[in-house]
Image 1 (cartoon, rainbow, N blue to C red):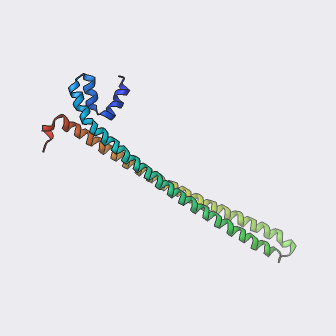
Image 2: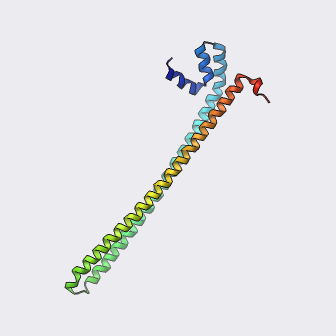
Image 3: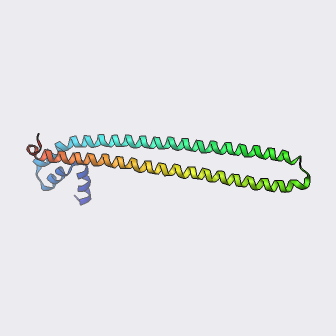
Length: 172
């Protein structure tokens, strides 16, 4: 058995069983395997719990992302409607102007229109950046929790292995 395979086996079956098998002691290997069946079931439950947490996190972030995107879209639609309405009002106002004043008025309006578009684009980009920043922080915290859960499980397994190895030493 190569080193990589032994390490993988150690992760699932527990170090004691692998070492007992490697040392050729069938009684110790059998005892370690019996102990580790419970640990295997615990590990499977932990995996199911972690999977449920991950799925819940994915669903939460997806729902928040959808809600955010809907808000961005709604803001954009409202902005575009307002800009179109303003342009219609402006076009109607051109009818009341002298023909030689229309070109200058159109240029001024067009410049203001472009500036409002640019300001709106910057506002939306700032909202997107803030949304991404917050979600990145939440994702980092979520992964820290998963890592902490995993570490706690490993510590518990290690403690149980030590207790199983010498039950008299660890009994109350």
